[in-house]
Image 1 (cartoon, rainbow, N blue to C red):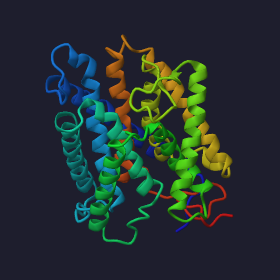
Image 2: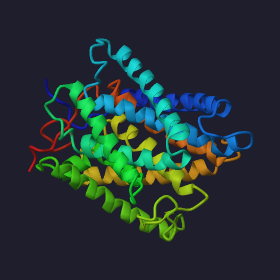
Image 3: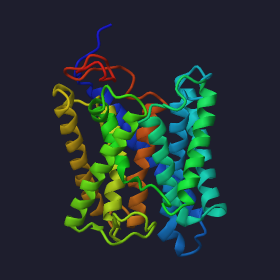
Image 4: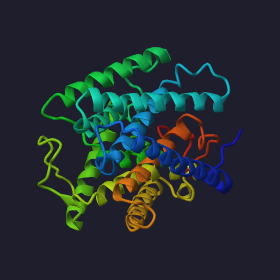
Length: 351
């Protein structure tokens, strides 16, 4: 069967985007309602209004982490469920339970609220290193159950080493760039022909270089303080300004940079040969991130009661952006080719 080149699929795109962002709004409203009435953290009274967003983001981002770990291991142990929707629903529900448990253990038993960002950033870094960028290079060829167990142990152990050292964490600022780079295929194209684990390290090096440019631009525009490093003095890159505008943009980017390229089948950028098509797509989505974040910030006090509430809605989209394609297959239902591409989803056979 022939594979379409640069197809325009407006109805499927609209359906996918509707699912992502309607579920984002509904789940964020429900989670906010839960954590403001039954906080995960030690917040009481007036503290809840200022800190409930930490409960929300830690719960949902760890839920997404568990869902992604299941996905990269062939959805084990749920792969025996034949119906895709039923299987996806079970994986999602289990992931949310594990996400709540993870957040609860961190906040109430583990390092406390100060450990949220270090553990989120570092666990996602190692998931990216071993799986997203690394294509399971350490466990490739093993049975899904062994893959899951070994990856979980590896990520847990590596995270422990980092968070209990002078490093403290691996900042997650590379995450939106990973999402847009993978969803557009740009990172896959740029590292075509490389073997693992070299490919994984090359991808991460590209991401860190991009973060360096982003930080410098953020300093120039006044949204980043180069002298500030509140989480770990190991990192001398600084931190975003206290008004959280940069953080809003980061969270919006994570909610856009995987969902839009996947759900739109990368149209219309698929008409442009790589690498230019991918680079144009990345620039477009990164620009869109800034525009959407700037618009949302202006809605604080109008639509959102506070910046804290805005942060929860801005970040919830990353969960469904990943879960719907990777767990339910939405957006991956029919392959397609970029102009000049030989094999759907891969670039290793292109010079």
